[in-house]
Image (cartoon, rainbow, N blue to C red; front, side):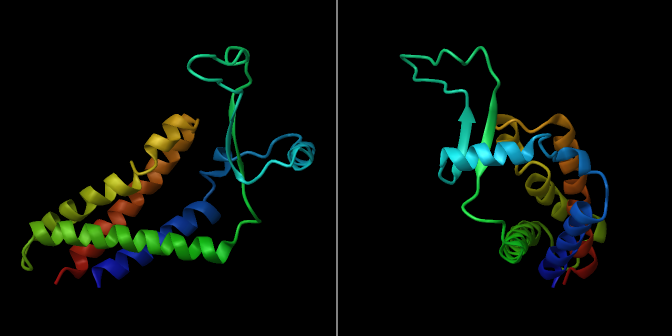
Length: 171
């Protein structure tokens, strides 16, 4: 029961964080010439994938534009985002995290453990997942500091909810 409750609680908090609360609004921006950029990408017939620019060349032959810039990442999706699929995959991911949180907490806590101890032991692995799970991708693929901070705030809320669900519903 704590696993399912934690999954639902984090799903609700995630939905609120991205749809109802304003703190992520500045994290994702629309390019000032988005229509023109989309037309250029469409005209270049770039297949779906993740791209970086400028070309870095090879270790033996570095690209000449690496110093000049601009520098960036471009992600081309194969189709329009499928909200139903993405919501389902998010739910499954949150469920898997809660299963591992439950496993770790179960290894460390007896059924009669104090709620504070259960909260602490459930929240700790949840923080590792929800706060630090995407850090390396963010570092290497240009996530802005502000986005790290807002994601960390969300992750702490998800982790606290996970800890609370396990503490309140522990067998």
